[in-house]
Length: 230
Image (tube, rainbow, N blue to C red):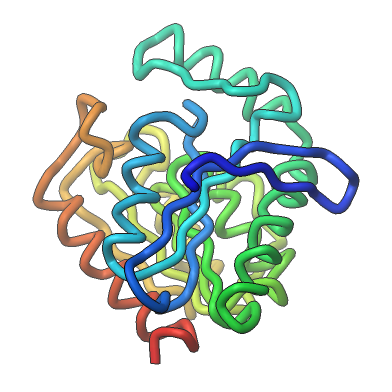
């Protein structure tokens, strides 16, 4: 059942892409979208987590303002995505992510078995979840978390947090990475010789080697951190 609907605490109904593993899941993953929506890339990432043994769901966070938003990886798509993402009050996507985590927790034996994994805008939200909604999760992963250094100044993760950064990223800069490392000394942080969005095969900055290593580290981190992976 790849296409599902969820109901958030405030009554908002949103769509999501769901992927189920073969056999019992080794935990669950909430896949948190980029500014481009739940598109082919995010659906493929969700399916890949299922292939790795996790129950995975990617909620459509833009459904609150534009249902079914799927944007292209070009200048127009980026501008449209920025307008959708950064004009959406952060409490709204966090509420939707919390609803998704709660649904998964019911299926995998509790919140300690659920993680968020986000990319860009979603990476920032994943890190925010580790601070503001930590009791709903067992771990969080943030890939090149856009604006985290600027927006999450007072946040502190209360669960294990893994951060992947591109050393050549002009958006989440090395200075931003250094700020996050100082702010969150207990987080596990890795930098790669790559730019922004390096895990996405549809983007010009795709870096296959960095993407593969980050994926390997992410799966190991989840298996070690989620109770379902023990």
